[in-house]
Every structure is written in C-alpha cells, then in structure tokens.
Length: 132
Image (tube, rainbow, N blue to C red; front, side, top):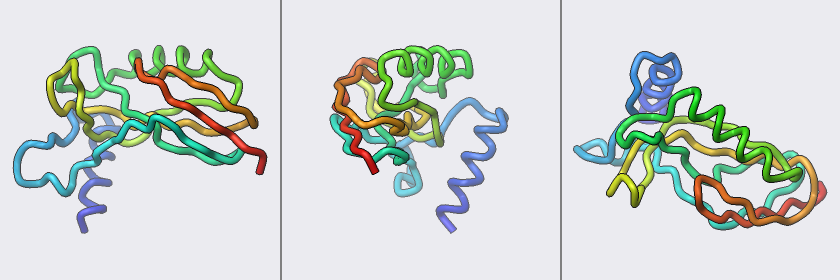
C-alpha cells in the first residue's frame, strides 16, 4: 500500500498539480523516496542506475522543466558512455539548502563501454561501463 501511495504522489507531481515533493519532516519518513548520491557506479551496456538527485535552484521545490532540460544538456555533453534522464521525485540532503530538499532522481543509462569521472550536479561520479 505504501508503494501505491508514493506512486500516486509521483503521478500527481509529474502531472504538474504540485511543485513540491514529500518532505522528510513529519511522521511519514518511511514513505519518502530518499535519493542517494553515488560516488561511483559500475554498469553493463544497457543498464541504468540512479546516481544523484537534481534539486531546484530554489530550495524547497522540485526543479522546473527548464532546469531539468538545461541539466540534461550539460550532463549529456560530458560523456559518450551513456545518457542521463530524470526519474521520480524524492528528497536528498543539500548543503546549500541546509537540509532535505525535493529532487528528481538523476538516472544514468550506459550505452558504450569505458570509464570516466563525471560531474553530476557539482559532485564527482566515477562511471564504469562494461560490455554486456
């Protein structure tokens, strides 16, 4: 039932009915999608992993479509090992926001073998992609 509840929250957020994601304050902490920063990932071609969370320039709200589009262009321009996309809403700790803030999952999908350190939302992520 909890997964269904989060799916409904995600659907409402995706539909644009609200601009905030569930916060970590209050009693429903177990239901919050906590997006963890991954300093390194190892994937085979065709696999995907959540590597970070994209927050808005404004703390407390999800990033806008324009912010996501700009971030995707910057991320994709760094590498030929794969491509980035954004997933479900969640929360992550942010030093700039001084606590938890809403984010969109930042997903890397591997398309070519190799290894590279990428800058994802200001943080280094070592990506290793192996052939299938």
